[in-house]
Amino acid sequence: MSKKIIIAGGGTGGHIFPAIAIANALKSLDNGIEILFIGAKGKMEMEKVPQAGYEIKGLDIAGFNRSSLIKNIGLPFKLIKSFFQVRNIINAYKPDAVIGVGGYSTFPVLKYAQSKSIPTFIHESNSFAGKANMMLGKNATKIFVASDAMDNFFPKEKIMLTGNPVRKAIVDSKVTRSEAIKFFGLDETKQTVLAVGGSLGARSINEALATNLDEFADNNLQLIWQTGKTTATEYKAKAAGKQNIWCNDFITQMEMAYAAADVVISRAGAMAVTELCVTAKPTIFVPFPLAAEDHQTVNAKYLVDKQAAIMIKDSEAKEKLVATVVELSKNGNLQNWLKLNIASLAITNADEIIAKEILKTIA
Image (cartoon, rainbow, N blue to C red; front, side):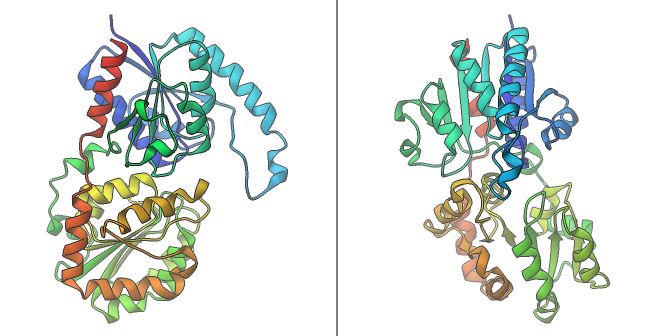
């Protein structure tokens, strides 16, 4: 009889896309498997998971708000309510296993599953584990990680180094640079810089670019600029009329963007790092300093230490970012060196490794 599996988590693309990749891998190994997602109401997963063809149930849950303490008043009530919601969902669905990928809903779902002795699996995408995952790790069946030295956070015997699952569209992409450049309406003869700050955008990256936009044309460069949703209008106006700049709030076909890029500017979320390893791009990381436990800096440093990327502090982006991009664009040897080193860190079948291990454990 086919198994039933719950996948819990979300909040950002960095949690949602790996979760969907794991679900797809489970389905391809056992077509009869039933998969239910649990997310947080009002978050990105409530839209992206159904688009991928899976059912999702939402919890009334929120995380601790670091910037406004007053917004945390209702938090204990939301947590209590979410535990009741989780209990009802799990008792009705009766899963054979529960997978947590990070995000608000992971903790209550895995905590309750562990109390019922249901096998639980954690996927920790970052080089620095979050507190919730560390607490859950003690009773987890297996913990899938993307980088080494994770026994600082989890019991060594439970860890399995798998890498991060990457969207098939990116792993299997056959798009040529020429096709991709045409897709963005740009010039094949010019070096192309891709700037991505995640789905919500990155203020420091956007401001650094907006202040120095003319530097791109002056140095015969062109720019594919994903601004994020928050302040897209302002930046689109700045880029208007510039032939060498493609600017929009979101890039739906990232495989096109990677294929077009000669150099990339990016935040250092786990999925961005993983995708850049797979696509082997010379990258300048600007880690988001307010990410939990400053994990983006840890992610970026992991690559910098292996001579596989360049890192600029968020606070220094306005002064240094565009100058560093221009410098890198003129140094073909450094570009090739970074490409070579970042490519050596790529794992392209993490979703399959994880899915096989889960099915083997619960068989």
